[in-house]
Image 1 (cartoon, rainbow, N blue to C red):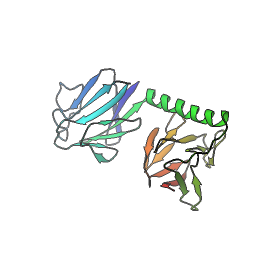
Image 2 (tube, rainbow, N blue to C red):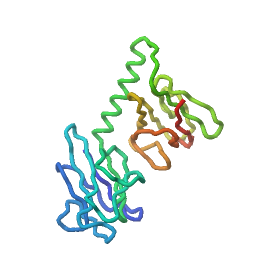
Image 3 (cartoon, rainbow, N blue to C red):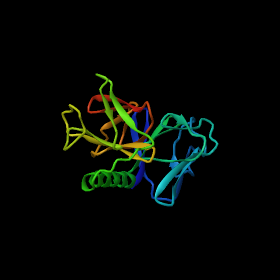
Image 4 (cartoon, helix red, strand yellow):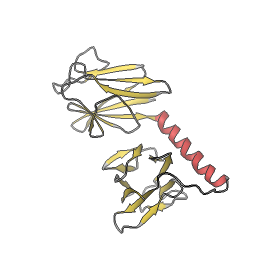
Length: 216
């Protein structure tokens, strides 16, 4: 079930389950999600479900705009689990258990396939690497995947007290990171995320260990 967690000044105000095909967000009482603050336009934004159970958001020509993960929204974009949405004085977090389950399944299949079939070398179009900020140690994602944490078999072990595990997987030329825990255990550029698409030069923190994601 997809939902929006709504906060103001760091306080959780409510959680809204996205059961409708479309919801509008704004200051007017007619909106499905009402944010009663003058920093919010009367009808500020809308979120809707697309085919394939994906959700998109667009700015409805609001005065103060919509920020997605710190970036101003100029065209409709697809939401990903963990996205942070800024509307006026409010912070909304989008979570999608279906998307997270799908990503975890794909990661599991990727790992299973890599152990079940003989490795056949191929030359990926893009190769990523993690650089440990503490000692500049480099870990190349030569197979397009890596596991970080202290739970089970991992490629990069981190010294956390609690059991944590996260995975990085490559799809084509894109890389994605996923927290394989009930609660987010990955910080991406300072923000806790369950899963997200990576960009080169992103800063990743898992279990107190910090890395920079770079292209080889």
